[in-house]
Image (cartoon, rainbow, N blue to C red):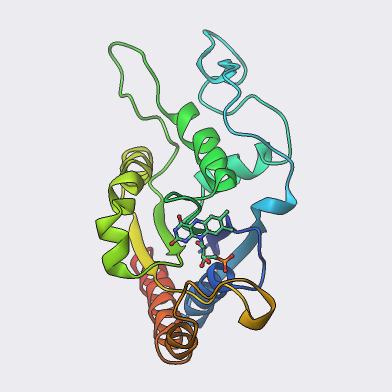
Length: 223
Ligand SMILES: Cc1cc2nc3c(=O)[nH]c(=O)nc-3n(C[C@H](O)[C@H](O)[C@H](O)COP(=O)(O)O)c2cc1C
């Protein structure tokens, strides 16, 4: 049997902080399963690309790029590969109540070619069903996330991903993250810094465990 293809897509500008750690834990869970896997890790902020440019090459009658992204930049090939993956984990911090612009841009490019507007055919033309997960880290608490309505803002991202790839995305939130290693260097005393440090020591390891378990269970489900 061919190796299962897993993509780990980091939509955080930071490669070693909260979101990246969650994604690494997820990848660890994937690798722990006794299954042949090929794991590709991508940092979106290393790549030069934009969101959808509305070139509409993916919708052109008899066009060479019909049903795939026809705009050429650093992610063109990656978009193609991700659509054939078995499991994809997307990670993002919350920036101003939403996922980062980089991840959003990547998703626009990923979703749009697979939604078609032919009257008598299926609207979704993704080549296969793909299991997806979102691992999202944020500064605020769970209660503040709900009261600020982040989850409402976030739900179209889940809906479009589920619609295009056929499985409802899994989601894991990580709250009240440690934003800096050394809070003394930054103006941040509006936050309960001691509380954040304690949470980082007690809750964050559990969040990593949960991400590990998610990776393990998703790759097992894909067999
Ligand atoms: C530009 C910017 C905007 C942010 N906006 C929010 C926000 O609206 N809500 C929130 O809870 N955290 C916000 N944060 C904090 C990050 O989401 C949080 O620290 C996250 O865990 C960072 O992820 P990372 O460690 O992977 O980079 C913001 C951070 C930055 C830099």
